[in-house]
Length: 257
Image 1 (cartoon, rainbow, N blue to C red):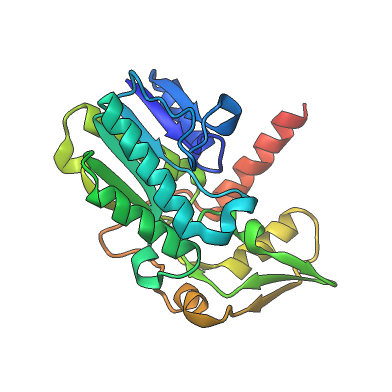
Image 2 (spheres, helix red, strand yellow):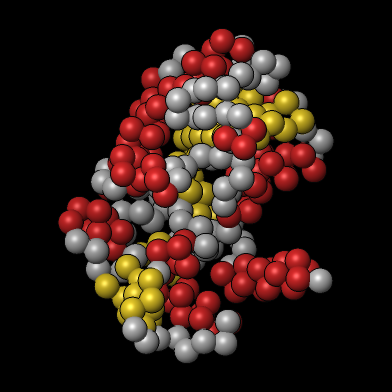
């Protein structure tokens, strides 16, 4: 199967591309480095592609209006898919996006709205935050590392990628009852982002001086009141944060050789 991957060099997308390729699929990565601008639609040609997996996200320069980013990218992908006869669209979203509907979550809700209103058959995978999220949202402040107060059930990005590919393969095999619609995936246990950051610092040989602060407004409230926790119907992964830490160290050590 020929699969096009939007955001194929990102945290999840690079794993999607690797897992799909190792499974014997032909992959096409849709990135600016390959002459494809997902926001403008320039260079977006999906001829011969059977299925699209969208794991894209805005770059630092595009985060001013995430709603516009996800609306434009999704609209451009769906138009190109219709022109090329693509059979299915698989999109990565976030658990709680519709309920929080603020900040990055508002962008993901907009993405879901565009995809579900389109003419291309679709599957949406809602995931919790990735283990990498703790490092991404933490900032040094004097002797401290400041993290937002977040209740989450974080998951390994590789596990999310594997589920995206599994859903794509189910579509190709005609298992629409399994693949079509909205799915959820989460990590094995609820963890505070501050807890993860403390473990990360210890693993790096640093002092675990972490200061946890609540973010203001509706966005901050949604992060800390349980809104972004998975529903009882979610598929739970078995990779723990400690497993991920070990795998990350092993991967870094191999890369350094």
